[in-house]
Image 1: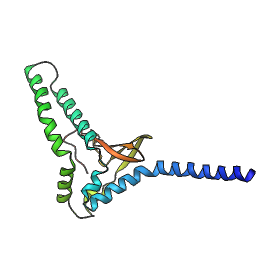
Image 2: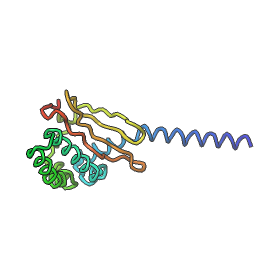
Image 3: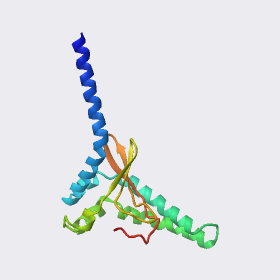
Length: 171
């Protein structure tokens, strides 16, 4: 009887340890999979890590909020800007944030593994058990983060923070 409880305790400890290891390692494995897919120019595999619907919605919301902030009030200029941006943003974001545009971007991306972008250090920040961010830029004003969310046992990119400082340079 005592052997049985020891065996149950060992199995429970192993399951708990593997769950903790997966929790810690899974974001890094996702990022490695994305990097490997990009290096191999495998747009389909890279696209599998992106929730395009959520990324498009996130970008639309940020652009509209930015325009609303630049044209406060109820002047004719402000009303036209707000209405106009909504008409223009949707089709542009739909084209730019799509598996097809990802395929084109990978076709024209530099193939050298020693490029500056590949050497640039990135940092990951866990927000909670279901969210993390990746930042590959050191910007004076603004984030430029890639936002990830747990979906099932894996992770998907669900947003991109637009830069607050459009003149900022990525080193």
